[in-house]
Image (cartoon, rainbow, N blue to C red; front, side, top):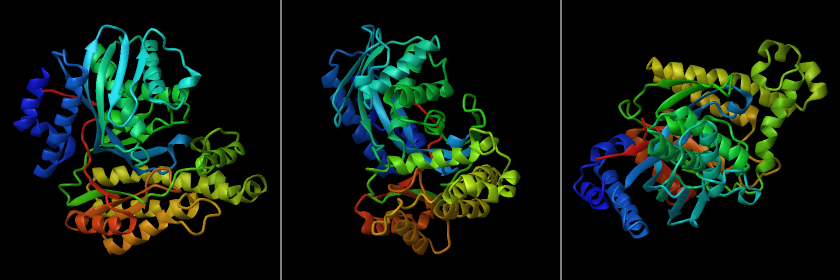
Length: 428
């Protein structure tokens, strides 16, 4: 379509049905998305004034619903795509370059004839793009150039995996734009994880990319990380009268690398006592039977974190089963239990040695007070700083958000819906 056709469709509301699928219900949200897309179209038209066939793509952030710190031990998780996304307007070219522009970041350009990892690009968007293209090429997938203007609602540091959303966006554009969609969501996710770990330089499981690429509620079993078992979970929280609320407590992630890396490291030290690399391969009953021996080789904290893994991986499976069976009360019980386990066993709410700044426990305490026994609340993501999640009755959602904003700052709490689709192209 031409940029004029796109703008006409946006202004006339002809994309509202698609917006309903991606962003939930509500006229106010449709108006906001129209304005957002029109703004992106204006920037794109200045970037590519001669483009006669603009294509529009979207990839979402994700929320970890169950399975806190289980994926890196080959456990089970329950996660969902959310209505915050990254969009791109793209002009596909035959010059062999991918060029990305946005309002908030410096432009980047990647030459598709040179896909080797570059140490100088570590930690940059160019590294992710080059790594994704390299993985697609290694899979025998057609790759090609494009120029794109990108706009993101998935804020960096929000705990909703902006990196996975960006990786899925790039992978989706390559797959749909150059390969007619033949690679599919799982290979897009794998390409994103490969780029993040090998080119970008950040350890990453496959959960974030998988959820962003597949969309909806998904239960994932990482027993074999190269072939994760992905099971869609069908449940309509909006129809059930609940909203997912994510609150950014504004705690700093600076200097937390050691805290995050200590969790998988300590879990692996326990696994090693049983001749295994990951806790998934350790018998839980034998683990408890050998606790006295383990205490001579591992710290008590490592043992507690291993105990969290065993229960949490099983809990993630049960949460999915509860939703499939429509048992919302049991689901909320399990989510609350997960939150207690993260606090008491995993111990990822407060960095070691910190006594004054305890944003996550404060947010959870406040959430429980507002919820009054309804719904559920737990830490979201890696922990130590950042975000919590709560399932809030829809009639209470605005009140809940206002109270969280009052304490943690305007805009700290976002009321979300579950997005049923993954990386996608938006057409007229």
